[in-house]
Image (cartoon, rainbow, N blue to C red):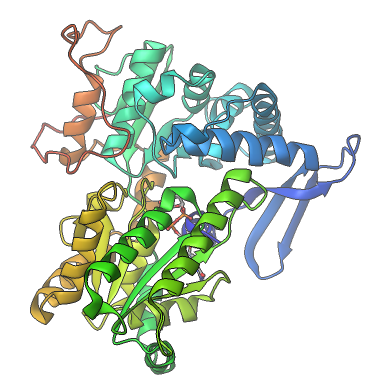
Length: 498
Ligand code: GDG
């Protein structure tokens, strides 16, 4: 359960695609070679080819390199980055195994879409195996770190070269795209200046675009308009004795800022006793990556913090926070979205964050209020109309929640109308169409993303551009820097890659 499957299942259905995935339980012993399983059914509406992994490979590749090295690296949580050589070796092996399976199953007319950081080496591995007629796209589903952060990682060159096997690369925000372009220029010496949003490397060319992901807005809206879902929402508020109900839904991940939010809530109840008995918070925290030590420790800390909060402030049959670990089905989730006066989405870093969009898509009643971290990729599309908070400052979180709880009905309606207009216009379908277009027939970059792409394409070594003044910082923040200036720039025709 998470943003990746929420986003990709509708895509696969619409494209008549085949999902090549892993099967962590396929290979028991070290010498078991039967590593491919193909099937359709089990409630999954598209064919799946599963690449088998041995248990030890799951430990090194997935729990190790993906979750203990790349994930914290991309989110710039440097204390959690564990760059072990054995993890790296497993990562290479598994990426090669994926490339072998995909290559053996592809026809030259197939579009190959490689999705997310678990497969960063696959684009180049595919390029080595296939003829140039194959179109290869890659989408990076998480933030992309800045040069300073990536440079310190031992295998940064291999990762960048791995990605450059793709014809097109999509990121959620212009700043992540721009970080990647800068890295290719500064760390690989690629020409990134000739055409904004295009990286020239050897005889190849890769188009880079910001493609913020959307949600299947209509399906959330349709559920929210069902009478029984609305009745469930009323029942949720009644059951939890909520006069005001504030919701958060996250995977139980240290990037989601759950601890920081609970600490802010504690401070809020301590400072404003009038909120006690009136405001009820609910944290849905679905466990994830449960074999990884950092996640086990984080879960223990979160649960201790919830217990302490409830022990300190509960009275009669009211408690400040309802905490839920079990996942809900979609219907129940939407009932919670429409029950919530406020939804708090306050990650410390997040590629995009779909919960923010799902909440707005579900509010066809026009009510509700979104508190949104300026560190979430979603802030580039929704930040202007949400209540934007700086999660590094507790005061900012508290003020955001209080402002949301005290906002006039008219202002709530006005903001929600604008948020919904963004969400309904940027759906999974429109995102998919743009990404597929980038892979097959790249179009010029949009004016507002050009501003960021031009900035990153210039002022780097290897292409005769200006150099930074000595002592002046050329670093860009790892996450997006508030808004990208929407300067008009001339549209540039990106020639087809290769
Ligand atoms: C990745 C990247 C990027 C959660 N609990 C339940 C439930 N969910 C669903 C939500 C939503 C998804 O999980 C969570 O999406 P997010 O975007 O918040 O988070 P990640 O899983 O971290 O997502 C991230 C994102 O993809 C989007 O591109 O922003 O950087 O890591 O769809 O609805 N769904 C149901 N019951 C639950 O209890 N049904």
